[in-house]
Image 1 (cartoon, one colour):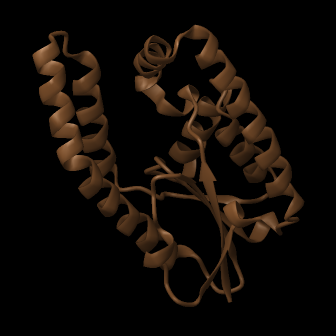
Image 2 (cartoon, one colour):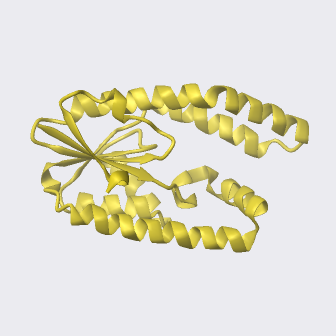
Image 3 (cartoon, rainbow, N blue to C red):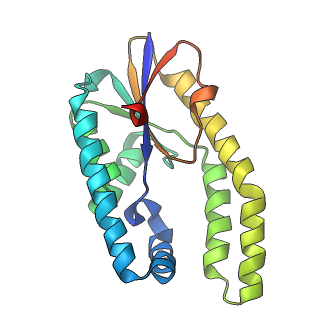
Length: 196
């Protein structure tokens, strides 16, 4: 039996890489600094509780594969991305780093081309200066967003289906908008942490 722990996550600005600064500025301008800071405290609490819940599962980490939303590589490059993002303050990647230190393996989860396409659409929205250009960039993003999400979900599920071995446990850290579960192989037993 193959098992997958399905963890819906809240992304922090540290998770967003090169888009971090711009996305933080947009959030502060929309919410105001006080609301944004309060939101950051809530997100920090979410991650602290989630970390306790994940380690409370007592997984055999040497028999665990980690699948991460937004991670297109594994091996040395994947470890470097995990480490660098953890150092920037990502609680998500700090948890993964702890799991890897105890024997878990990271798996290339995402299709790089799909990630780049989505990133470029977001970047175009953030970088243009005129209101009309922003509206056009937003329309382009909205027009492609659902299709890209569907394609990413299908790819993520295929990676899990192909790489998760019998008697292994996978843990998928995935943004709340994703819907990977229906695309998983029938022989994968899913523990959805949102329901616990």
